[in-house]
Image (cartoon, rainbow, N blue to C red; front, side, top):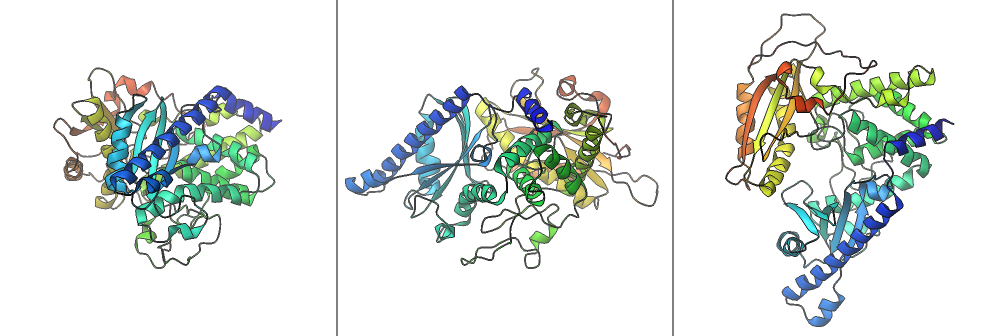
Length: 471
């Protein structure tokens, strides 16, 4: 009975795409596959190979992430990997030749290359469907086992691991349908409660998938409704930074670095290690900070309290999904406003600034010895009054200590200036790309921001003491 109620709730929330939408996605993937096959022949010809070799040259598209896991919804992007031969290099052919081919296609819009990312990606829309395309060039065109990782660079390893990790997760869960239903629920919950964003410092798709898969392993016979309750109970009480792992971390035969805090100094600083199950095992949640971990644990605790209330008929699933009251929780906020000269520049500028917001959070934590924490909002806003302008917000709060003491004032102007300097050092920055950071009181938050978040939940436990900060 609870399972039917849960599935009906997810359907009413619009989390399942229609048959027509599914067919449309398949057609888009087919068109993308045709495009990369034409591209690889062109790249092979330009490289000076003979016509026979050109005709035999091939590239292949693989999916991963939510689409491959079977938990994507309407409008979701498709994570894809293009595997090509060794001579078609990433910088010369993928980010130049293929980029130029896509730019000439009328069906392609919002083309956004990010060659300098931790995992280089080519983002665009094809026939209105968002695509994130990664690339790995190697001697094989299929991904059979760990041997595919021989003689490839670290960026290719990270790109290849998207597909390998997704497949490994599906192999390691005891009940795939229950896993998928639970994961759909948790992804939706994370977005509603503002804790779904890897780049900002919360959790992204792969992180949620691994956490749900671990709960499925711990309770192999549980229904999705039970798995959801157990998810909140387990992870609200988890002893971080103990890692969440789905299988034993293998050293592997290739000598690639794996997550190991005993050997690797950087791994010791990870706040919420969520380890990928495919070799080389990595921490998929390295972006999490002390501030964002605190917010997520509070949310997991709230989730468990509401699940208990649901079991006692004192609450419903709707209570669990009340939007996070971000703009009601703090006295002090930072507003990070950005501008650009045109839409393409603004899109690129937003991508860069979003990737740096996490560094601002870390600077607050480091320079105040984690006495001042920052809660970044996971999305950007635009009020329509200013064209080519977006802004982000961070809530600021003082960490409570066991011993009551006089409120310390923090002058964060130096931290903000240092952050602005690092952002303005963007190597692809163009004229008109600017940033302003200002202190905003809660009463001065633009009204457009409140249209996205309703009032706070009855079940939300606000344990943060609101105190002013010095700017």
